[in-house]
Image (cartoon, rainbow over the protein chains, first blue to last red):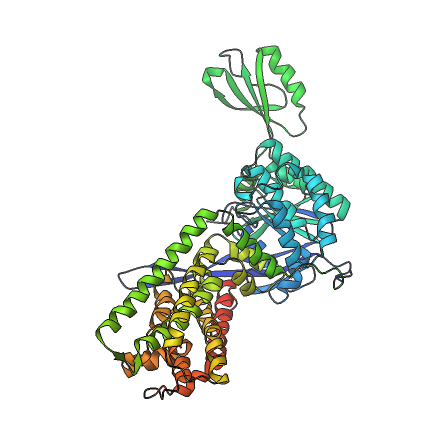
Length: 328
Length: 271
């Protein structure tokens, strides 16, 4: 029914909350803070967008405003063409939500039962539930623990179950709040691969909040950086990196203490640890890690190495540093 | 989509069914909690007995007739507690984010909250109430008519509806009250306790309070008076005993209004 319009449309969105602070024995001071403060953005059908920002920047509040859990103080929200609070139940049929930190499954029931209950709540019909469950079980590899109560699952297994539960009714829009938090590398990567497949196969629009740069790199074509409730950046990751100059870091463990690796082409020495046995080199944009490694090996024998991706916190911090000249 | 044709099970029955199965999964622990519930019921029966051991009649009722009040009140309260007692744990649902999960599903939040749990152990108290009812009924001296029989049969149901509304109201008030469970319990469990005594034993102020504000007397005492054909004390005539459905409807109207306001407060739409 919502034709080719945007899936999410947010204009001048503001959400305040009231903080009471004790200022005397009986006096309380009432201050109004804005968790979201004049946010505007649009997400088109089939897009995949990352919402990033520091803790308390307003990401989770934004998700709650988009789903109708919270009412905006001012401004407008349209999700799947609907006003979230007034059309909450209609919207719930078109949106799936995953909270990384909070379960939406039944703690004491196995996933198979949870899917059946959710199917009944969404009034999907037994045949549709069976077909969709079979697809999700296969793609998310849930078969081994489908009959185990959720409370006995590992975090990685549970998160796959949460994602399957959120996708059971084939929503148009999938909102993920910190979907990979606490997951090991392999589980996180499998989840990302699955989400990409869902997007290409079903055209599901994705909006996720995250602290993990891998999520942004592998999943998001576009990032929205939120700072103190405002949009600090909207565009692709490459543009963000260009703006703040986020660099990958090559960490080399040498055979023993070695002189500082200064002047290696395409790098800047960031830190020297363990008397020179471990050194951290920032890679300039476009620098080849292989060439840098060859240059390093020529100077000192390398025992082990790691390439660290720029982390979201770092990128965001540098964005604030660059933009917040007048602030604070 | 052929939604109508392929519609699945009723979601609420499915939800309650899953709770019942999970509580029956551990037979012995279930049996122990049912016994515990019977024990609590016996303790309350003992308090009624102790009162009547010292007086022949209280508020115009014989001990057997008071037993009838006890049985009807307990049956109604146990059924309400079984089905809706968890609603006054609202802060817990807020803390764990379960209420947010309800808001993300295409069904009314209160309907989901009501059906998300049952306290099956309350069958203990309901069973005790039923047993007491069967013992006292032949001895209460009822002059039976069809109308009176129907009234007595329906009293536990309207009573359950009144107490269920009180539980919903108790839950809803906790959108405002921080650590308010003790306060709201005073009129849910307090009301349940008050309902099992003949309200004529209370002063008229308390009796009016437990009839028109917290309609505990309307769940058992007043219907029993009507069944017995007794006149009823000042301010609370016995014909009110026939008005159980009205008390239930009024209680639910208040509970639903407060619930709606509370939910609006939670989402930040009101206040």
